[in-house]
Image (tube, rainbow, N blue to C red; front, side, top):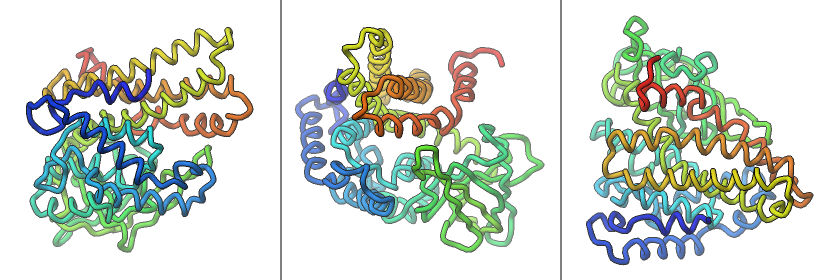
Length: 391
């Protein structure tokens, strides 16, 4: 089964924003496919592995602007804030098509998937007006300041402090595994606002200017050779009162809504395309080897179970209740462990022509069960909040 089938299974009734079930879904798909064919940079599509980091960075930054100009930025965001007013179906469909077209991943993903929904749900009118236009246009890049060197997966245990001063706060602390920090204009960041307050009530969500004094960024080079993350030190960095999201003790509740978006359908759609491509490569290069038949069949089935679960999430979008939350909660565990198993078989069974591909994929996949919250923590969440098991 291929990624085209996921797009084909997406219901048509939400594409136009009404109950019409005509040809709107097909029209959206055709429009997106045509636009991607015309706009995906050929040098990225055909020579991605040979490009320098600087060339890749330039392409990725420009890609965000191209998406905005083409009308494909913020597909699921409200029109009144510059989005397209569509939904998760269209977001998922476009990500699948972009994966097929070998499109770059822009620097704006964190802002569009996490920051924009956060501001629309929890931000002030001033924050929306100030930040949303440049997020959607690709003119400002954002990073996420959650993880810390000493906090691990215990998000509630962050040590970064926000000390109240006249007109705002001074932020001091360290954040690690910060995606896009090297390119970011702003960071949305969790920090302690009141160390004496009860756990989960002592955190604030801040919007931090990354270009001011007191911000220090150190690259983190992965085992694959890529640099996707950084460690960031904040030393008495000022944030105005107007740049805290919600009240000073609302940080935890705001963060939980963000993590639902981070682990949800849009991210999984892109991962499904990559995993499906890797499984197809294995089947093409090693499918005739009897000793691998059982493993390859299992990986193929698990890949399509991931697609099925993603389609289930899309179908439940309008409900957004317990069933939707249950369906979303297992996606990250499913795709991360599946991809690790696929690359493990790829390393073991690879043919010479695919050696560099599997080497890179294997090293890249090692971290996916850790970032966005470790799978061990995610299983705790599933057992307690989804299944209702005792702690």
